[in-house]
Image (cartoon, rainbow, N blue to C red; front, side, top):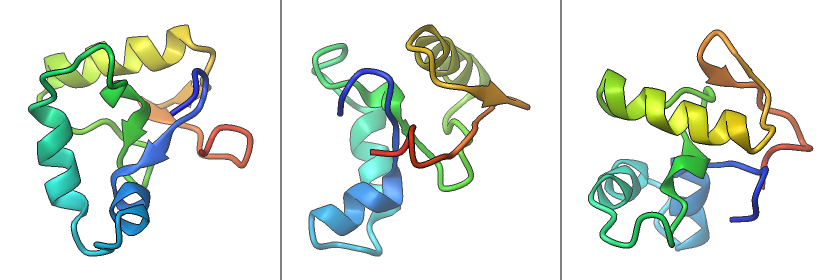
Length: 84
């Protein structure tokens, strides 16, 4: 996932041929042993929200914001320019 872009758990599930496995994707990224090599903070919910507990979500939001990705009301503003 390139710097300054995001994708959704569902889009990753579709790309791996398991379109109903977005929750499994979320669980795998939640347990990401390769952070920060695997940029799990760039994966968001379908509505642009950040999953997980409040502290973890706040950290991911700050990572995304620092990459110049627009956020409003604690969610990524989903646009063609931002989605990967």
